[in-house]
Image 1: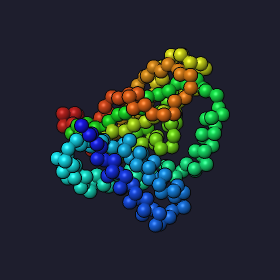
Image 2: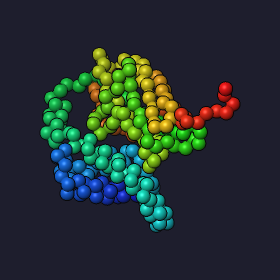
Image 3: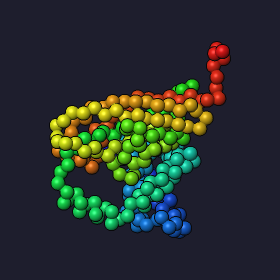
Image 4: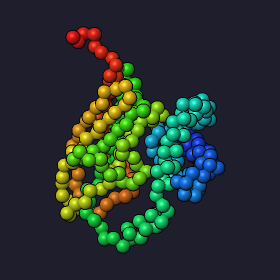
Length: 238
C-alpha cells in the first residue's frame, strides 16, 4: 500500500506561486532565497492543515474536487503568506549562529513540552470556528514558542477546521528527573463572539537537555472550546 498525502504537492505549488508573486514585487522584508523559503513555508502550512491521504487512482479523482476549492486556496495562501513572513524575520546568519551555539553550549536541563492541539467551535451550531485568535499564557504572560514559525497568538482558519497548535519553548530546570506542574491558560477571541478562557495543568519531568526536534507522537489534545455569539439572546432569560 502506498499512502500519500496529496496536500503536500498542492501546498508546495501554492507556496511557490506565492513566493513568485512576492519575488516580483520584492518587498523589503523578503530576504530568504526562494528554495529555502518555499520548503520552510510549506512545512509551516502543512503543520496547520488536515492531511488528505490517498491510496489509489480513485482517491486522486476525489482529491481533485476537494482541491479545486476557492476557499481552500484562500486559506492556504493566507497561511503561506503568514509562514513566509515569519520565516523571513529570521536571518540566515541566525541559523548558522544557532548551530554554532548549540554545538558549543553544554546540555541544559529543561522541561520539554508536548505540542498543544485544540479546536474551537461555534457554541450554537457546533461547527468548527475559523477566524478566531488564540493566546497561550503562563503566569498571565504570553508564552514563548519553540521558534518564530509557531505563532502566539495564533489564528484558526476554515481549512484547519477550527484547530490550533502551540509548541512551547523549553523551560530551564535545575536538574533532570524533577517533576513539576505547569498551569497554562488559553484565551480565545473572535469578532461577534464572547471571549473564552480555559486553564489546564500539565505535569512535566525535566530532561537532561532541551529538545528542539518535534516528536509527532508527543502531543496533548486540549479540551474543545466553544464560543457563543454576543448578539444572540436566550428568549427564556429575563
